[in-house]
Length: 325
Image (cartoon, rainbow, N blue to C red):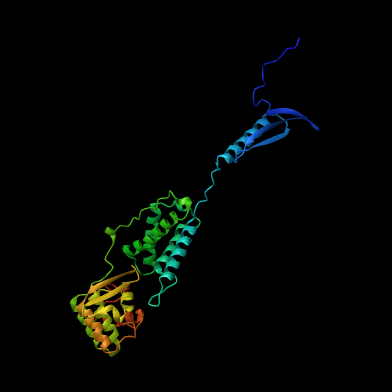
């Protein structure tokens, strides 16, 4: 009589088993695993001493299989950004922007302007190899204190407004780094401890009497005629040194009484209603003074030296180093 066993072996029970090999009996696995393209591939390995080792190896194989199939990738380790990397990234873009905006009309040029030098100095103060994510508002407080002491030791006390402008460059570099480096995606740049309410006035306003004295001193010297013209047109238009020195003849119109000034700082034009200024420029051109294209010819330090000499000749203090200057 034939006995039939209807009980089937559970599916997968033979995936992990013990087989005889030339050097002895070893545990291993024999499985088919689905591939990313949908096909099935067989994996066999019988080199393990214990069943636990074979089970662990098969579990790892299956895990790698479904990660590959469903496009699951292990999380990449994000390397933290240092202050040196953040600063260098900003300096590279800032210097490239300076070159891009440099034209034949650029009257004042430095490879590394003062605000970028301030940024480099801050980087050394904060620590170039330090991670950006460790920066806090207190670091800005310590920097303000250090800048204040540096100014005192150099005999040129820095105003809060000057320190604040340097700190704005630091924050600009950090904000640039946040948008550049993935590691800083969730980093919040600390707020500046200095606000507009703590700023002091940077400019000294001349009185009408002082303006008259300086004008008379400039008029007495024939070689200072261009400095006198500059002084007059600066008072009329309130233009900056660089704006006035790059001004061309065609940017003034006597008929409409306007003077156009271009700011290399804001990259914008502004038209000023100044009939007396336009008339003064036209008179200078009629007298064949100035250059072929530009209204003014002398460099900025020439004007500063003459203004210093003229002011001191009428007992008016001049310069940042002079009390009341």
